[in-house]
Image 1 (cartoon, rainbow, N blue to C red):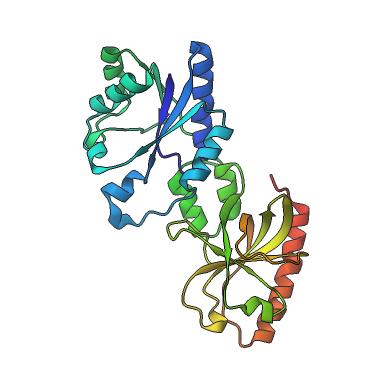
Image 2 (tube, one colour):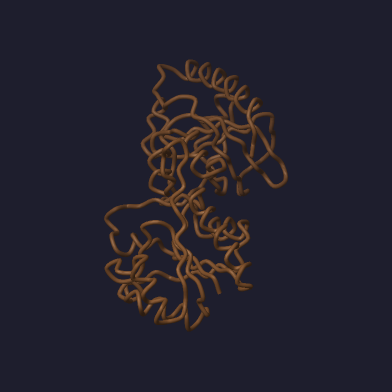
Length: 295
């Protein structure tokens, strides 16, 4: 089997280049292709104090990896015991149980205890164990090296255009609609409150033009990410207003693609002033979404 190993958080353009090589080499060698990924993220076990947030949850990752034509997705629970395995022990397991014939890695890739399994070390192990190593160069977009870290930084800054360039698709959030305090309904803009994993990475607080996907229906939408300071909110949340939609959303699964940040979140002197700003945001958001592409 031709294998790639890693978290693949976000399944971004760098990952896609690696997966393309994976498919190519599997075809040339007439072997199956596979990805070994981990849950939770290794940093959650090795450095829990970092508070790392994820771009895509496990189910999203698995679906995106399969969309890239990967034959098998193998999920390993990342535990302290797994972290203590040497590089030789880990690839020995890949050889024994997955019949590793070639390992496809990115630049700077390491595995095993103390990150000892770099490209040179893996090539040496391959000579002993009977597998080869293929290194895929880094992918750059507008001079930026594509990485999950770079995407998190752009996301935190609210630069969704850069996030999209690095991922190769719009950044998405997915969650079940839960009841809120009905503030939006009272303002004539009823919103759907998304219940998200607290470890989900979010864009900077503010108002965004978004596409919403409800079952088979696609709707233009506006999304507020933040604390609603006009009403004294303290806890950050995600509220989605579906334009031109009427119906009960509670309990339903909703996915949004976040396209562009319109403004930061701010406090208004009155509900009337907020309502006026929301109307202006909607007009601008419609223009952005109508002019752009959902893909």
